[in-house]
Length: 321
Image 1 (cartoon, rainbow, N blue to C red):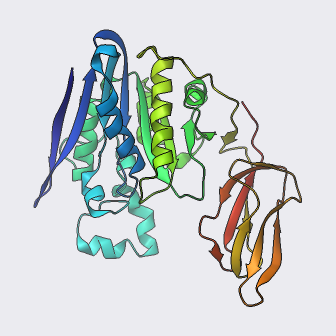
Image 2 (cartoon, one colour):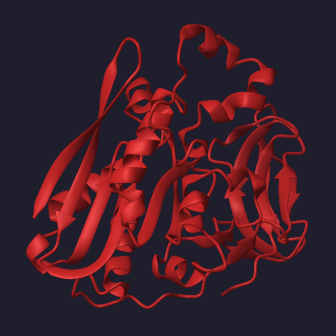
């Protein structure tokens, strides 16, 4: 059985419908929840879920898939990272003091929501009650900039599941206090195995990232014995521990164009040239940027034009697991 339900939230002036996908397999099995679109400029996960819903055949599925492609239609429809409730607050958002209370507008900080709360809290409450609380495993799709490789945020309890996804590197965020009100952390407190996938690239749908997300989800479903396809065995991956790992930012020594010599997740040694700076005035390379430590490239500036002291790369001393 495959169907779409709609969860409705509203404020004083407008109502929004949140699509809720259900694929119920012909055989019993695990219950997997996929969610995307908590933030309005993170679109890759939305496309991953849309395609998976079209592709998966319930007859060949054991278990149930719940999926919410657009959890926050308020922000997605506006193309804004967060949904601000009125124009005055949108102006306030440009003021540094707003950063102190921005969690009020970040959907990923209001879980498990409130039935009679703000429109974001209503959305979180309905999704929580209809899907999250009924699942065994939760994957929360997000995106960050193209400067970073795709990755999977895990805890010590979910590293093995994270490795099955075979996406970039793993990041243990269990010690990050900013994440303690996030959906994945709240769900873990209820005994739901939860992971966060961060795709590379926001405000765009990048085909290679979409395909990587679909492949990762199918491999997880194989691991959970929800579908009968060969399991791609997890390869060794780097693990970034937010409490222990050194992740050193490397900055441009001058203005110019960045010419990169290393790829994301490429291993480097201390003193290796990561990139060079092409001087526009003299038409030649006039600056070299070297790795400060032995490690792995975790950030590579996507926009080549750079100003002095802007970050051009980051190197982390991550172990492999």
